[in-house]
View 1: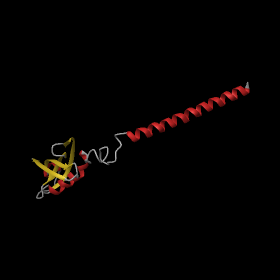
View 2: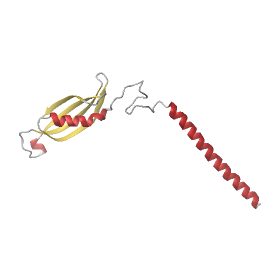
View 3: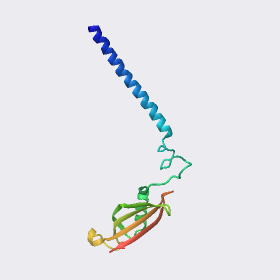
View 4: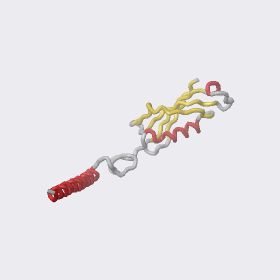
Length: 145
């Protein structure tokens, strides 16, 4: 009986190893087949399936730093606080731009900074960047006193 138990144990081990090998080979075969025909894996870094179908486009939030830099350069005074409103960020298809809005506190150049409430005014910024080259196209500043 002892040799029967041993042979049965070896049989179970052999079946176990065979199942592992077959399942591993099947997984590799299926994953290679899917990756070669997968439409989501493409050559472009920013989108599209290959270079023939769609041009590369920057995402809505890719121009965030460019907008912040443009706001600091174009505002009359010093930017004390600046927050982007990510809920209003969008891609405009008719002019191929990405738009992000910001809310900020600005200290006028002639005003001494005493506190955020006493020395600043509130401003809204609407920044449009090109989705093709990520440059700032338009920056609207609306001063709220």
